Amino acid sequence: MRMVDIIIKKKDGLKLSKEEIEFFVNGVTDGSIPDYQASALLMAICLKGMDDEETLNLTLAMAASGDSIDLSQIPDIKVDKHSTGGVGDKTTLILGPMVAALGVPVAKMSGRGLGHTGGTIDKLESIPGFNTQLTQEEFIRIVKDIGIAVAGQTGNLVPADKKLYALRDVTGTVDSIPLIASSIMSKKLAAGADAIVLDVKTGSGAFMKTSEDARKLAKAMVEIGKGAKRKTVAVITDMNRPLGKAVGNALEVKEAIEVLSGHGPDDITTVCITLAAKMLELAGMGDFKKCAQLAEGTIHDGSALMKFKQMIKAQNGNEKVVDNPKLLPSAKYTVEYKASSKGYISAIISDKLGVASMLLGAGRATKEDSVDPAAGITLLKKPGDMVEAGEPIMILHANSPSLFKESVNELEKAVKISSEKPPETPLIIDIIQ
Image 1 (cartoon, rainbow, N blue to C red):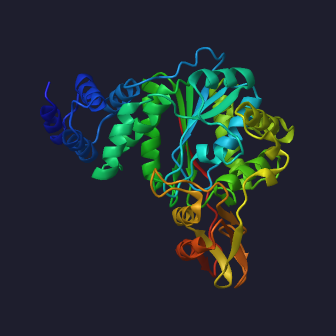
Image 2: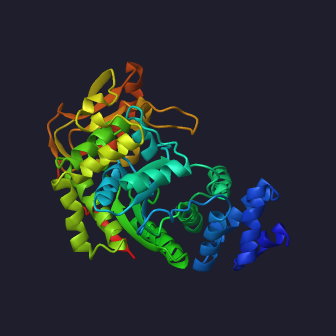
Image 3: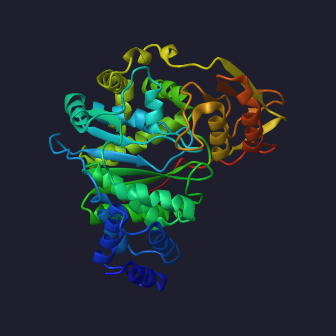
């Protein structure tokens, strides 16, 4: 089998066999296929696409390219959740404890933030002492003991994806539905869960800018899950506006505690209850309506907040932050960002808000950058709110006053004020299952 023949076949729009796809993935993993040939096939896939069977075979080959996590020691159905990335997206910190409080194990591998999107691992590491670098044995033991653990990816999990993503990033082949779907789902399959709930974001702060593209990606991933015999549901959620009022690592942990305490913002609470309900439904806890009531009940009875506290303690963090969020890192300097005119906030463009937060130190421009856990932005107003000229819209948090100017310049592009109140748009756009 020759790589050049596989490239030509896909360039001509023909379907690749399972054996050809496995040859490609194995060659990328062991280095026998050079980057220029791998890049050529990625471009051909980007231009000509893949059908469901090809995408499934690519995903399975990638998932098998390295280690996989065996969760069989943990009883009952293990449900995983993945978000395609957003601004202010602290859903894992909230829905994980909600689901675990109801006896459904949550064994979650999460990532770090890059660019305008935040990462769950960065958020958890803003809690003093919290350890996200668990061995597989520690990870499984904690889930067995308390029902939940959230850790960074360990070992040699899906090495093919690491190599292919690095190539896609520099060859203009990131925006391909089959390549995105196989990248996400290969990691989910290797992580060992029995069922998967996907939070597919759409809008200005998401990778998929239109709901049409979000649906295509959601359907592709659900088909992969079906082909891999994993129960899979995708929930398409709005990311034209930031979730909640906090953007930044410690700020988002504080807001997660507020939600779990029953007095968090309505939007993030609604999204978390919906996603948690789908996880519970896949675990066999009842229909969606019943599962949503169960999920909401964990907030009212305090069991979700207690589970979050247990998780922090189990992973060596200071669980006292739950009762006293002032123990979380806080920035030395704050600046108010004020409305330039009177009117309704018609939009806060999420990706630009995310960039503004990153410029304060809350995120990374490159993988090598460090993150300031205290930096970020607190929203005082949201789209649809009326403001007066000069009224504070946000509070910016940073540990160096020199960082505010560039961040404010980005916010000037993010905040739109108009004379008419914008129409309300749904948070939950669609559910694909």
